[in-house]
Length: 477
Image: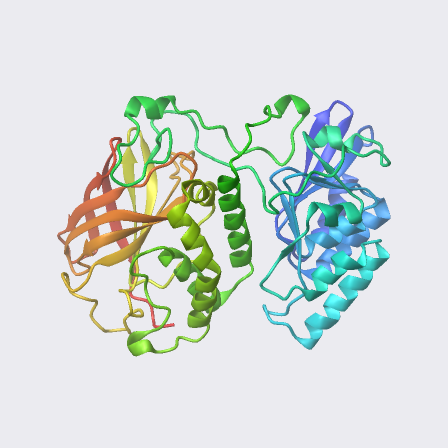
């Protein structure tokens, strides 16, 4: 966890803590507190963390108890797993109405063991000592590893968390006994504002005024230049920097965004081949011919197959809603998320493509054919014409174009990995930055499949691309 001072006024600071809980964080928090100017008032410790090591979380909680630190979970932030111990240890707990607070039991290497059960018991005792009600502790104990139980506004109210609207500095200035308004009415548990990252400067790669589905015209270059997308909000900001309230969000959009946040949080807790299988299921979700979770001839691939099947069960209702509710689909695709661990692939290419005066980094990972696992070492890849191929198209910033956001989608078409032509069209978003459209590729290789170059399709602003192979066929998982 990284700690930094943010000056709110000439006499006030907030100490921000971001990132996972790892070894040494308690010492880093002590150092950060010691470095605070004595002449300035510390309003609160603001947290945004997915959790981490329980033992270090216990030590951080001890520091918070010793210094009696107010703790706040700002707007568009989360406090999950071990981070919950820090919130519970505070004598003055605050959370924005759209912040996420989640709990689950401890685990050892993502498994529930005798040791992890004992650690969960200790966590429950500490939470009880901090005044957390039995109902909330019960959610923590009963939620198995790999899942997260999100606390409702009623849960937060029961543990004396002040739920506030508006800016964080104003909320933290209130007396400890004050209430920043009543707890909000029941709402989607994962409600959070989207956080677009593109800059409004120059022609934006893939940018359009609104996401355009395949076959529809994107915005003109002039419209793209005029599109203004605000940067992601900071962890907290002085009142003068807080944007005006946004218009109400449609229920379908909020539901889609909430479900995407829940999926991303579940995925973040997975590891190894099990996670790879879940990511592969995500890339295939909603496709008319999804790839198989199994290897050649229906062979079970162990943790990969298990993770893939479990993920498909979780994603089944999502696929149904995506197909029938445009608002839900827009909400699901609204957040620009880092691309998760890669699904198994037969080949990987790295390169770039050009849009106006900006260049976007491009990673193209060729997926196994439907019903097939990755080919064993030494086995030839399928020849052109045998089947349509799918790949993940991931884009992001280059050193010369740092404002390009990260995103990814599935492309489908034909590609000859031994050399020849490549024709790929976009079919399914994995992670769509707000206001960005997808593109296709049409090119060829003249060196046996080591490099490809050609034209970007399905775009009025993007022009050419170049790719170089960097990964060989992966071993069967």
